[in-house]
Each structure stands twice: as C-alpha cells, then as structure tokens.
Length: 113
Image (cartoon, rainbow, N blue to C red; front, top):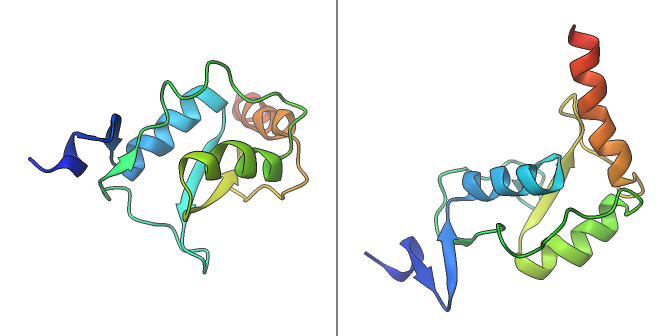
C-alpha cells in the first residue's frame, strides 16, 4: 500500500468523506470540501490528513465561521476550500457564529417532530 493510504509523515491519511465526518463529530456541524468554483469534491478522494485528535475540544460557539476556517481548517488543510453547512444544508456566511450554526441543527430536529 502507498503512503497515502495509511500513514505519511506521522499523519493518518483518510478519505475526504471520512474527514468531513470527523469534523462533524468534533465540531457539531457538517462541512463540504469544495472547489474554488464551489462544487463539492468527491468524498472518496484519499490521502487527506485526518481531523480526529488534532484538537481536544470543539471550537467555541462565539467563534465565527471565517475564523474557524482560518484558524482550524486551513491550518490542517492548506490549499483546500470548505463550506460550513447549516442544519438545512445552506452555506453559512463567514460572520455567522459557530453557536448559531450548531443551533440550526437542533432547530431542524425540533421542527421535524
């Protein structure tokens, strides 16, 4: 197996879809890796460093989407673009606080029942 499938430079490599799931589990919101034109990248792309274990806690709710992208996402995934998704699947704006993003998932669940 190649380095990209298992380990590279001490990092566990994963598929893009798995990384999106790891971010959702820790941060409490869904994300989509996208092209510069805004199209979703395929989830089966391999050789992406995993997100699990990089941060002990989720980012604070008062942090904005733009600060999360710059301070966490781009720190681990330079050269990639990401969209943070609200509970209804819409893209969150950069000035939206992460607490608001997370609450949108709760509100979606409440409205379904």
